[in-house]
Length: 446
Image (tube, rainbow, N blue to C red):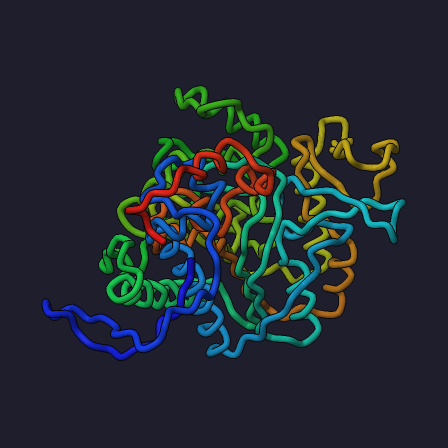
């Protein structure tokens, strides 16, 4: 129960601080359940998060760290003269990234399928076209994909777009933001969030290491990559890998971008276990929304892009935005050709709850052979016709930052009520709830 006691601050005979009551205690809130002395079972903890917070300080400290991180990011961006906007979560196009979307319907548009956004990118760039030179959003995004230690279908993204910024500016801004976050997190851990592990501040010393994608991958593989902008790049690369006796774990990726991404995960990303690493200038086929150029040393068509990895995990993605409407249209068409089926058709996944209709009739939700959306949005292409100034774009998953600075091992620890698995059916009483309903322990906490 929760009680209020009015009294005079004093000390016990042993010198401990105490309160000398001058009035009878007042009951503020009844408590019908006994708070357990400990809570250790992971499933029980996640299904009763409020109890876990009362029992285990670290649980609350991680969530407080999350709140402090988002607060710091907002203050940092406001200080840089960015404006915060909210963009649509529901629309006809999930837009801005390649991922499987959540598809739904609205009573107002029963003949159309809508998608929950997988990224706010295209909306924010429209605002830059409209004259807002510095814009950001911190909000939810949704990807209808798997759940593991670092992924959840619902997560929080921070994205910002800055007119007249280039890749070097974005890298510098990332180092500055991460350094500031590290200092703030270290201060909180020392003073308030004391259950969290202390940070190694040497890890965040600037400048961070930079690794250029193509040369670094060629060095690791021991051979020159084929021309990656060629239509035959995928089979040629697969042959080269076989000749070099390089095996790719799991099922062979069905597209060139996915194969390159898998190779980067094998050979480039592990370098970030020692120190933060920017992987830069990805092949253009991996970044259809980014500006691209021919590298003067490798002669490959590459993008003005960088990804920051820390501890083997992607932390931030940034690039110079493609602002030529014709070039953007061409890149998106090329990307669609890469991810579509060999016969040119597009696979479309319809949730069982959807209205029964032929898949080919679905409007606005276009997906590839793996059920993932391609970031094609004709209205966005038309918006570019009005002129998008040279713009740098940046995105980061907030939960990844929380994991980095709190020491949390799972994304579920950084979400107020855990992953989607934990949230579904949370209100129903189950075996985990009954475990908490033990006989009152007179030695327990009240």
